[in-house]
Length: 269
Image (cartoon, rainbow, N blue to C red):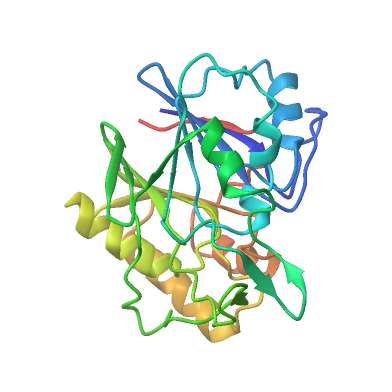
C-alpha cells in the first residue's frame, strides 16, 4: 500500500506544495484509491494536481472524525466529476454539528443532504474492512487510564459535551505488523492501538502515522505515552499534525521518529 500526504501542517523543501493545519492522506492499494480526511480547504485538491494525482477516480473517502480540519475539504470535492460511485465512510456521529467555545462551529459546514447527493454515505460504528487488510476501526473504546473520555467542545443541537465518539483510525495489516493511520487521535492513541490489536488479532504494531493530539498534553502523559510506544517495540513512528513539537522532541530521544510533510510518500508492505 502506498501512502501520500496531501495535506499536513508542514511542507517539504523543494516540493512547492501548500500546507495548512489539517490532514489528508491518499492511500493506494490493489488498484483502489482511498482518501483519508480532506483537510480544511481545497488545498488537498491543489496539491494532488501538482503531484499528478487524479482524485476523480477515488473509490472511497474515509473520515477520521468530524472536525473541520479533517472534513472542511469535503465541499470542494462536490466540484469534481467522479468516474464512479464513491463511498464515504464515517462514524454515525461524524457529521453532527459541533461547536467549540461560545460560537465557533467546527464541524461539517455544508448540508448533509448535499453530501448525500454526491456520495454513498456509509456509517460504520463497528470495525469494517475497507479493503483486504485495511480496517476502519469504528468507535474506539476508551479503556486506558491514561486516556479517559474527555469532552472537546459541544454538540451544537443538544448543547451537550462532545466526547468525540466519532474519532477513529485505520489499521493496515502489513507483513511487519500493524500500521496505525490516525487523524487526530482524540480517542487516545493508546486506546486506538490497543483496539486495533484486538480487532486485527495482532499484537505487533509496526508503525504509527498521523496526528496524536498531544499538542497540549502535560509531561506526565507525554512520558507515559512514549513509554507505551517503547513497550510496543515500534519499527517507526511518523507523528504529525496535532502531535506537538515538544512531544516529537521527546519521542526522538528513544523512538525511531521519521518526519513527514506535504508530498511525503511511503510504501507500507
